Every structure is written in structure tokens, then in C-alpha cells.
Image (tube, rainbow, N blue to C red; front, side, top):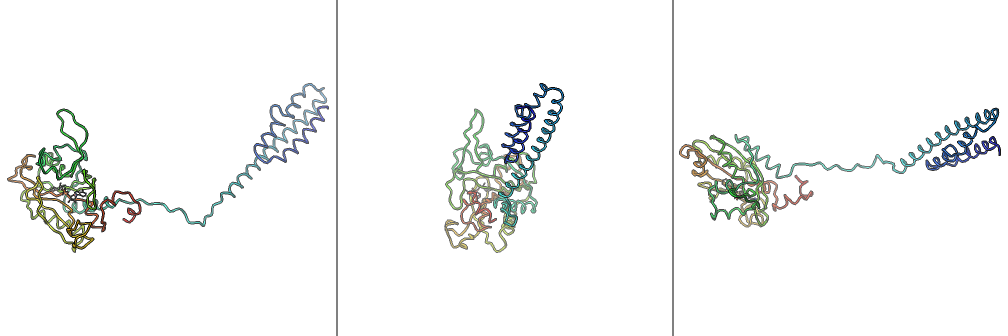
Length: 347
Ligand code: FA5
């Protein structure tokens, strides 16, 4: 067969087969058959050199025009196939804009953070400044400097989580059991007059129950100045209780022993659950203890270099979880840290 006939045959086949290409894979095979390196038309173009000059021009001219036409047709076909693929993908994944959207979860502050901020705001407005201290503490600040030496029975009041770390000449380390160590830390580096509140997490090796957690949040209150008395302490704590719980709430002051105060007292609020009748939440007593407090022991003032004849001080340690329980009517402290979104989203 001469080249011209082969060219016609290739032309017929190329146009016919192009119409049957339905995908990019089909098109790529078609390209290889006719226009690729070993394709039919490419072979013809390569063999033009062997023809006599007059035929070379006619066949060459025809072959080149066919090549250009096929290339254009190939591009056009490819665009069409791509458009069709897109249209069908969109049809399959069509979006119904009238459907309701997915709700977005909006975060909020944990009830303990909310209560803590309200308590700090209350004390700030009474002239107290906020300072923080470390959660991992030395035995010295947590106990010794607060007049609770080794082997003193008062250590049993604070079941302690010790850090397994001991080097020669260094004190034992622990997770602080209360925020009272910050009293000492602050007094060591400041002179009276002092009015501070110190918030933070505390840890106790404690069996949990409706009012006890092993991790709790406290706010330490400390004031040192000339002429401070128990009357100031009661005044500040009553004001705090009424601002946080409202004026109708009953507040009770009860004598209590803490080695670092003299005298010491607890503050209790009537149980929201049983209105003082006694229930599981208040352990049958009708009251919930929210804080320990007292007049700073004169020995502590002397130990930090203050003159206890001139200065007196009062201190308190507030339990924020207990305060939040009373504010929101929550009958089990353990709910706060179970991370149950159904509980937390109510606040
Ligand atoms: C103390 O921790 C003293 N540092 C408080 C203090 C400060 C007394 C300054 C005098 C002067 P206590 O162990 O009672 O005391 O704890 C204080 C408050 O923390 C309690 O009234 C209670 O509200 C809260 N609390 C104590 N233990 C727990 C616990 N396991 N879970 C939740 N709250 C607790």
C-alpha cells in the first residue's frame, strides 16, 4: 500500500476512534495509536524522506494538516470529557443548601474557673491583690514554716502526695496540700501592710466522697497590718459570703484548730440540699464547710522577720469547689472533674 492510501486509512480510523473515547484513559490510548512516538501518523511523517520530491510535498502537506487537525480535535475532546466528569461528580455530591447546618460547639469557662474568678473579683474589690505560688512545694513551706514540724500529729490533717525525689541536703518535695505556703513565701519577700489573695490547685491523698476530691482549688487570703483583729476577719468573710451567696444565706463561724493561726475558725454555710436538715451532701450536719481561717500565729510573724508586738494578721483558705457546689446546687463534688459535657454545658 502506498503512503497516501495508508494516510487515508489512518485518517478514517483516527476520526472514527476519537468519537468513541469516553475517558481520559481512552484518549491517552488513542494518542499513542496515532500521534505518539510510535503512532501511525508519526510513522508516515518519518518516512516522508524516502519519497520522491513531488510526492513528498503532497503527502507531507496532507499528513501535517491531518496532524494539526487531530491535535486540535484531541484537545477539544479532552476538555469535553473533563467537563462531563466534573458535572457528574457535582451531580452526585450535590449540596442541599436548605438542610440545617451542623451545630458548632461553643466552649465556655469551667464552673470552677467561673466561681474562682468571681471570688477573686470580690476580694480585689475589697483591696486585695492576686499573687500565685508553686503547685509543687517544699516540705518546709507546706508544713515546717507553718508550725507543723515532722511527726507533728497535725500533719495527718493533710494526707499528702509526696514527690519521689530526694537529694542529700535537700528538703522533701510534695504536691502542696493547701495554698497556705504562699503566706510564708509572700511575707518573706514583702513588708506589711499586706493584703493578698493567692489562688491555685492543691492535692491530697484522699478517698473521694460527695464533698472531698483529691484535687481541689483554694484561695488563700492574707492580711497583715497594725491593729488587725478577729473583727476584721469576720467582717471580710461575712462580706464575701453575702456577695457570693446572697444575703439570705446563713453563715456560721465555728472554732477550729490550725497550727498556723491563733485563734482559728471555720466558716460554714447552710446546706442548699436539705436547708440545714441534714443529708448525704452535708454528711448529715446541715452545714457545708467552705473555708478555714484565723489570726496569723505571732510565731510565724516573728519567723518572717516582722515584729509581732506591732503587727497582727488574719488568714483564710477557701475551698472553691465547695463554694461552687453551694452556688449551683451541686450535690456531688466529683461531677466537676468527670469531664461529662452534659454536666458542664449547664453552666
Ligand atoms: C486548710 O487547707 C487551711 N490551709 C485553711 C486555712 C488557711 C486555715 C489559713 C487557717 C488560715 P482545710 O483542710 O480545712 O484547711 O481546707 C480548707 C477548705 O478547703 C475547706 O474548708 C474546704 O472548703 C476545702 N477542702 C478541703 N479539703 C477538701 C477536699 N478534699 N475536697 C474539696 N475541698 C476541700
